Length: 123
Image (tube, rainbow, N blue to C red):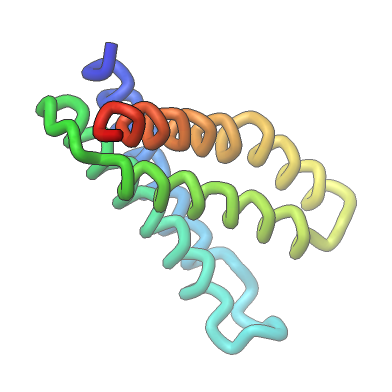
């Protein structure tokens, strides 16, 4: 079961790579933040790295992963929060809510569950 979850996390992380490239190119250059594109692409790159690394650890059977799972869950929740709170409304807000509810928050919950299970194992 853990191996399957690992492969799923790797897949989620790999799926983020084209997305982060797209937002690095497509986000408006001008905004209140000087480095808007870098900020959003950076968050997604950290998420992808966390998911791929966590998934790889699980697939290979490396058990100590609680800290990485916690950090990845935190990044995903932060991304969902920032997507929703910076959306300008209308379709942008709807897209942010769908992404948060259907992808970011469920994957964050999975990562948090993995972290809690691993922490209990070592406690």
